[in-house]
Length: 368
Image (cartoon, rainbow, N blue to C red; front, side, top):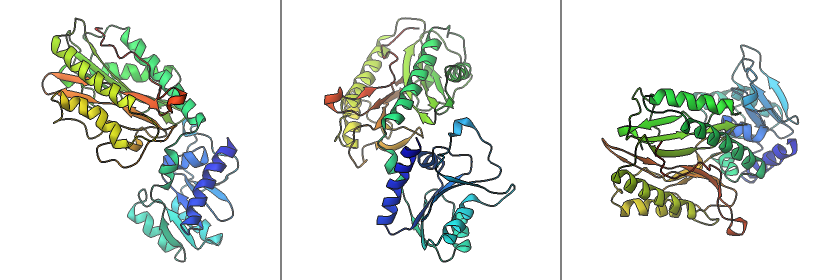
């Protein structure tokens, strides 16, 4: 694993050198973890001219869920209470003779950026922009293996809930049960706050669970995901409670299912991000649901639940192999409810069987 992290840091160092920066300071937690193997709270990573240093606040508390730092790194722990790790890293870079430092301006506050300039006035500050995020888009097979396990845990938790009695229970209760089951099956935690929506709430994206109780005839939509070794997946499913689905429910479900299938089938290396979105969006628009659609059909996943690429109408770029994404179209009818169907997949070439479906819970419209 140490060699893997060293290779990742080497790729970033090459980018910085090409842009004229002698050193780089990575502060965004997911980026620190990607390059260092572990990211204690508040830690930053300095890619210096001579060595790479993980600078940790003295108040950081080790947590296995934050990962284990690469043994090749030098680790500096600031006194507790101590100064800002970002400022300390800049001092280290200046002391090592660096004349320039690329930083993540999109993550640093204005105050921290000013502090950098004041403690190391001879350092020419540049912007890393989204360099690390771009490196993270294509996953290696070890990252995909962690995503695969996260998906297995998520499928298990959801499958167990579907076997329980649901009528009369609140959205909030069901969400808490799902989150407990994720941890019981080996998750480090949830990938994002679990959403459970019933009746008129069903189909709303990222609905915050309420005290509304499940009733017969309701649509029930759930969206959840496990965090396993830092990698996060997502699944969304919609069911009908306690009775045969009504005609309008079957019709709406079939349309969303067709849109989701069209999006999944568009996931091929070389496909434009916006073409994947268009494939799913066209099906829903043709059925008369184009006015209230979500701004995107899906997004990348990994160390964060929402990463690049974005599968949206104006998104620029093309898919590569080994890029994990969600495909999650949905329709919500105000006052009635709606349908969301959401999977996590990995883009694969046709020669390898096409997109790899990680979340395998049935997409059949079940009456629970």
